[in-house]
Image (cartoon, rainbow, N blue to C red; front, top):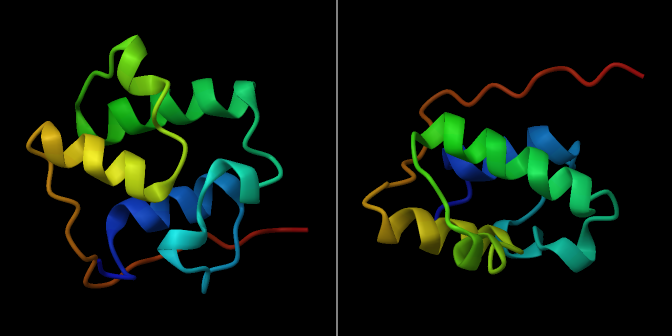
Length: 92
């Protein structure tokens, strides 16, 4: 698993996580603002960004970077490394 892929950066940006967080650390119990509303918004973001649809059963399993990446892979989506990842500035 690469540490510089587009899914990792999407999750860092979406949840406002530290840029150096490891992919395996991005999971619902460890991210304080990953609540039910954030989950709905995240699913919408993932479906738009990767042009996929998730059914209810799939959505219920998407609770970590690894689970999301696995679901995308099953749908034929390869989360490739970003050559020049750009994270937006977080303004206080």
